[in-house]
Image (cartoon, rainbow, N blue to C red; front, side):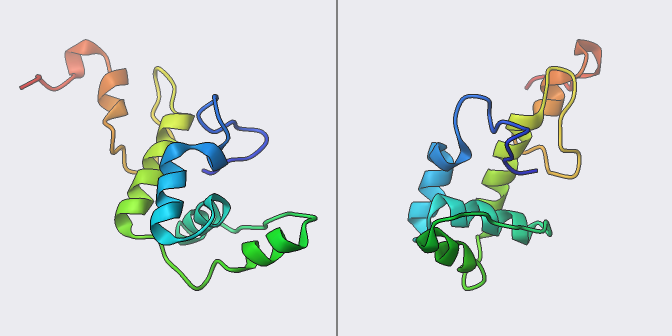
Length: 115
């Protein structure tokens, strides 16, 4: 689903440094952390932010006065799919495969013809 210490984002960078997340954050005037927490909330996932820093605790509490657009949601869904999919399986199955990864991992005989 989202980032955790057990599943690295796309295995090369923190989601808080991902240029796509940074771009969405800049567009909506929020921090990358707020964007990722809001994405999870809009997908129906419980969010329990953690911080010992008072400013971050206050920042994390400001998740209910904005929404991400459908385009932003689909972009972040696609990033989650990219980060969790392997060579033979597209995950998570409940997200739309906006990049067509399932077609890339299917056997050649079952792939639709390229136009």
